[in-house]
Amino acid sequence: MKKFLCVLIFIALICPASFAASKQKEEVVYAGILTYLGTTEQEFQEGLDDLRKAVAPLIPAEGDNENEWAEDDRLESFINSLVKTRRIISFYDSLLSMQMALRSRKIDEFALPEAVGMYLITQNPNYDILFSLNMMPSTISFGFKRGNTALQKEFNTAINAMKKDGTLAKLEKKYITDMGASEPERAKFQEFPQAKTIKVAVTGDLPPIDFIAADGTPAGYNTAVLSEIGKRLKKNIRLISVDTGGRSSALASERADVVFWYRNTEGLKTPAKMKGKNLGGVMKDTLDGVILSVPYYEWETDLIIGRAN
Image (cartoon, rainbow, N blue to C red; front, side, top):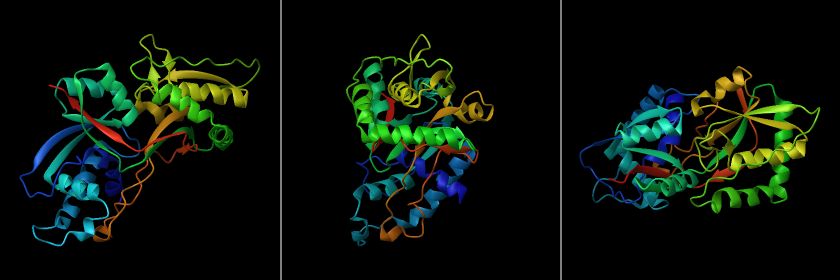
């Protein structure tokens, strides 16, 4: 079951909307993703390969009645692309290492949230959007060490209040929607003498959402959200830097009290023809030792990025 579920997040890499049903020869593409915790690269690959075998018989033969696919043409494209093209997956602990792999042609493409992909395109003319996918809504939450339910509750209260009063929407517009090619602004953190300090790990691997400037200073949407949470909780916020792959160890070692947590929250809608294939399941980027806050950012579309030349 774990192997099967671990492939669901990777659906975002599988489905160019222009693919039509085909029985052509299998192609191989090397693809990168930021490290997901709770599964290994090998398990991820095995799960993807198992899914290819499971769905191969579902492709309608020429002349067959294809009405069962009508509820979502993108899903039909996904199934055909999945069988036609085999993705060889590599995990990367940082965005920089994944970009270097693309430049050196170790991989052919990588997947990122739409806002991140668009920001990278504005910064690098050597990148192209190969295709986009809007079938798997995703979210970002804060992660806490299991047992730290008091801090989790405080963050949830602040986040829910920020949603209700429109603060999150204003920050999203400023730091993501209207960002363009500008470097994200550094947030200002209010100091509360004698108050508790909360250590929060940032990665810089999802700019302009999670961004670290060239001088090492964290900036962008996440830090703006944290600044507001600090004010509402009347507690000090101290930022530390970790790679995406080092999030759980930062919590386990208590180097950090909180980390940014990147995860998927929904699976594919499963049409009648695919009942029993469990494609509607949920793959979460999480571990047994981690608990999550309510989401504070979500998106509908992932972009698949490749080289422009």
